[in-house]
Amino acid sequence: MADRVQFARMNGLGNKILVIDMRGRKDRVTPEAAIMLNADPATRFDQIMAIHDPKAAGTDAWIDIINSDGSMAQACGNGTRCVVQALAAETGKKAFLFHTVAGLLETREHDDGMISVDMGIPRFDWKDIPLAEEFHDTRRIELQIGPIDDPVLHSPSVASMGNPHAIFWVEDDVWSYELERFGPLLENHPIFPERANISIAHVRSRNEMDLRTWERGAGLTLACGSAACAAAVSGARTGRTDRTVTVNVPGGPLVIEWRESDDHVIMTGPAEWEWSGTLDPATGAFQRDETSGETGARAL
Ligand SMILES: N[C@H](CCC[C@H](N)C(=O)O)C(=O)O
Image 1: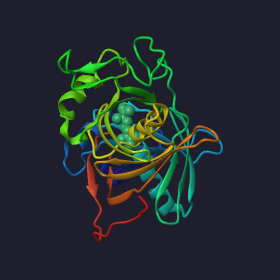
Image 2 (image 1 turned 60 degrees about the vertical axis):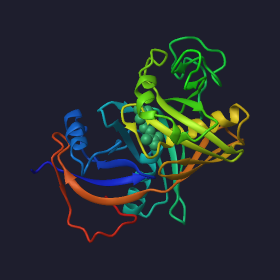
Image 3 (image 1 turned 90 degrees about the vertical axis):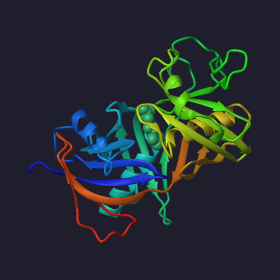
């Protein structure tokens, strides 16, 4: 097949990401290709990050974010770190400004390999989440699941990081909840007209929490960067945590700082290259490159 592009299979704390290089092309990764790639265990993914030519002066690239069900997402913190690592390995640059449907994303790779993404200013107005009904206080909305007089999960905080998030606070272990059962029901609850990413959070201290997420359009994942940001700001808003928090997601820790000076949320964590190959963005047919099997930072 002649019409192939480079791609890399990467992960951000276990969040399965395909970074696809669409620069210099006018077409987009088709829903058919996404479905084919997700159907193959080798390329099964949580999000595709498709890098396109920049659309505005001063930006390094336009990025399309595609969930594994083929829907588009407005934010993907873990995937953004993967793109930074791949482009830093390609260009030697350390800082990039990306453009997505949700706006601009400022990013930086640090000397120790950790990557920070400025995830922007969170929004809390019910219309911005969006919610289907008016709620004045989005720190705690009326929503519950389970028996009416003894709900399993209830009263989440909601926030938008560009994409919609609901955070259910629990006193006990986040692993004691059947998120695979409740996640799909809550994701598609009529209160969320654009669906929502659903998380369970347990606060360990003012600077640490555990978090599991059922992702809109992708299901259970090992990590969700935007959910970690939504949980951190909701923790601070509800008085549970300080503005800098380590969020332990199943894949490992992310450090989230809700910056005092400008209310931007800065997420810092790792990214990991697994292997590279070429694929046809129309059909999803792919071929893996012969590699030495080493891991670490790599250009696409
Ligand atoms: N894994 C991503 C989030 C994907 C968001 C997506 N599931 C949606 O909002 O539809 C992250 O690291 O932020």
